Amino acid sequence: MELQTFRLPYFAGCRYFQRRSILRRQFCTKRSGFSISCSYSLDKDPLIEKLTDARVIYSVAPAMGHNQEAHPESYLRVPAIVSALEKAELTSKFRGSEIIELQDFKPASPDDIANVHSKAYVAGLEKAMDQASEQGIIYIEGSGPTYATATTFQESLVAAGAGLALIDSVVMSQPGMLVAASNCSQNPPTGFALIRPPGHHAIPKGPMGFCVFGNVAIAARHAQLVHGLKRVFIVDFDVHHGNGTNDAFYDDPDIYFLSTHQDGSYPGTGKIDEIGHGDGEGTTLNLPLPGGSGDISMRTVFDEVIVPSAQRFKPDIILVSAGYDAHVLDPLGSLQFTTGTYYTLASNIKELAKDLCGGRCVFFLEGGYNLDSLSYSVTDSFRAFLGEKSLASEFDNPAILYEEPSTKVKQAIQRVKHIHSL
Image (cartoon, rainbow, N blue to C red; front, top):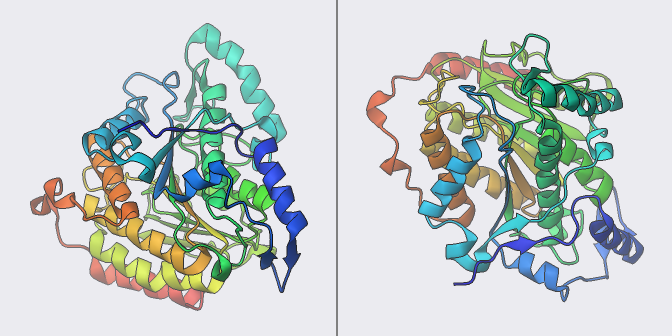
């Protein structure tokens, strides 16, 4: 079967998608709120026809030059995932147009990055590349764990650009797309940005915790500014709190940030009473989970916290900071997620997007440092996107799990439901 990689002539924020956004605005009439009714259709556009046939669209940005020996956030992470996808025959080579890998997308521009990060930080990091070229590796977070090599700036732009290209592709897969979910195609492809460096710790003023640029935050702003998707719902299930995303939108009523993370883990933020500020009060939800929380806990959290929060917010798109370091085998966390947990999360989030926002949903790789559990879990997430049976039982070992702290989990859920009136 012919390889169905997909080359974008332009990418996020460039002329191609701007032209189509302008066409839509010209041919669309505003209704109540932000619903839009369109009489112009792009159904016959060959680019759109390729996208509408897809079930999964993914992009790959492995940042092979951004690496430090023995560092857990290594250049082996994304290649391990790609290799597992190939072995499982979950790529374009085996699935044809059902699975598309975006290629030749352009890096994000400094202006894209500056929608979230300070221009001083962006310019300063670019300038620091000269020092990195001389020294090989420099630390860009004081004495912290975030390093840079001579290629870090450019490869971080590529990672962010891979996410923006997926936002564009998922949106453009819906011919005659309307912002109102009820008027949209309900089954667009799900996007997954297999990228590094990760992003959810990067604060507006600088890097943090292995993260350089806030990939999911930059994509959220892009969805708003380029595609008019005003209300963005971000789910972060990394074992660590996504403090950078939290801070970027803490006072923004149009971006809802919901994080589940291990209580007491790095970086020590994400307390349950951190709910947003000013106009954004109530659109930040943090749920620290006690160590040992696993599949049962997360299923309950999804049903009792994530679903009602999203239903009340009524998003136009759902973005996911997909951290696979909550896996029981991961060396940097103490939760008990399994590959089956991640399959269920991927399947449920896809269905939630289908119910609330026309299926528009893009995942962004964050953590995950055991290469086996990372690659198996991402592969099973792809199966979930395709609506296929999980093969988690071939990898997961129930014998290593122990009893979850159900009482503490229940107390945390009840408290967050009380705080947010869920």
